[in-house]
Length: 461
Image (cartoon, rainbow, N blue to C red):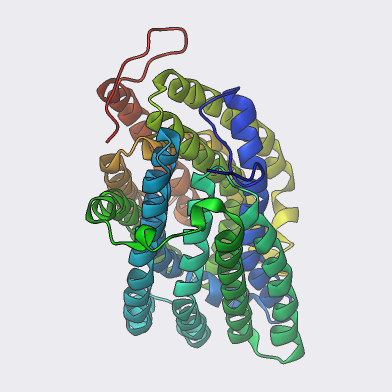
C-alpha cells in the first residue's frame, strides 16, 4: 500500500529514543494546546468575572473528567489494537479496526452524554458544591455534557492516527481550534457578558471544529482511512478485542475520575477560597501532566507496534529510555514550582489568599512529580502490550487512595487543608509503585527480553 511518509511512522526499526521523541514532540504540542481549552476558560473567567466564577468551573472538573473518560477509554483501546495490527503489517485488520472502533464511538458517547445531562445536578450536590457557585457550575457542566460527542470525535480520530505513527495531523487542527476557542471566550465572556456560560459555549464550538476537521482530513489524506465496501463490514472479533481492552481503560479513567470527585468533596468542605486555589493548581498540574501523558502515549504506540512485530527487546529498550526522559523532566520542573509557584497561580486569579494558598500547594505536589511520571511511563508500555487488567488495578488503587488519604491527612490538626495536596502526592506514589510492580510481573508473562539477549517468541493477543 502506498503510504504518505508524513502520515505514518514505523517504530519497529531505528533508534528508540529518536523515534519516541520524534513522535512525542507534535503530540506534546497538541496536548498543551488542548489544555488551553481549560486554561483559557479559567484565565478569562477568573480575570474578567472573578474568583467565584473560577471556582464554579473548577467544581465541575472531576465530573466532566468522569464522563469524558468513559468515552475516551474506548477510543484509546481501539488505537492500541490498531497499532498492534500496524506493527504486524496487516493492512486489512488496521482498516477494520478503524471502522469498527468508529461504530462503537458513534453510540457510546451519545449514551454517556445523555446520561450525564440528567445526572449533572445530583452529582454536584453530592460533592457539596458551595451554594453560591452552584448555578454557574451546573450551567457549565451541562454545556460540557453536550460537548462529550465532540470531544470523543476528536479523541477517536487522533487515537487512530497516532496508532499509525501520525502525531502531526491532530496537532494542526487542534492549534487552530485553540485560537478559535480563545477568541470566542473573549467574545462571549467579556464582549457579551455571558460569564461561565459563554466560556462553556466557546469550548463546545472549538471542540466540534477540531473533531470534525481532524476526521475529515484523515479520510481524505491518509491511505488507511480510504475504505472499500468490504472494509466497512462489521467485524465481531475485532470489535470484541477493542471492547475487551477499551472497557477496562474506560473503567480505569472512570475510577480515577470518581477518586477525583472524592477529593473535590473534601476540597469543597474548606470553602470557596480553597476551591479556587485547588482549581488553579489543578490547571497547572494538567499542564505538568502533558509531557508525562505524551511520553506514555508515545510508548503505547511504540510498544504496540513492536509487540505486533514481536520485537520484545525493543519494548524493553523503550521502557528504559522512557524512564530516563521522565526523570530528567521531573528534575527540571521541581525548582520551577518551588520558586515560581505564586507567580504561576497569579496568572489565573488576582486574589492574594488564593495565590498564596495555590503557590504553597504547588511546592508540596512538585516533590512527587517523579512518581507521577512513573505512572504514565508504565501505563503506556502496559497499554501497548494490551494488559487490560492493569488499567482496572490502577484505577482501584487511585480510588482507595483518594477516598482514604485526603480524609486522614486533613483530619490531622497540624496539617489541615494542606492534606488536600499532600494526599495528591501520596496517591501518585501509591499508583506509581503499583504500576512498577505490575510491569515487573507482566514482562515475564509476555516474554519481554532485555536488549542484547535472545528474543523470546510470543503470540500477540
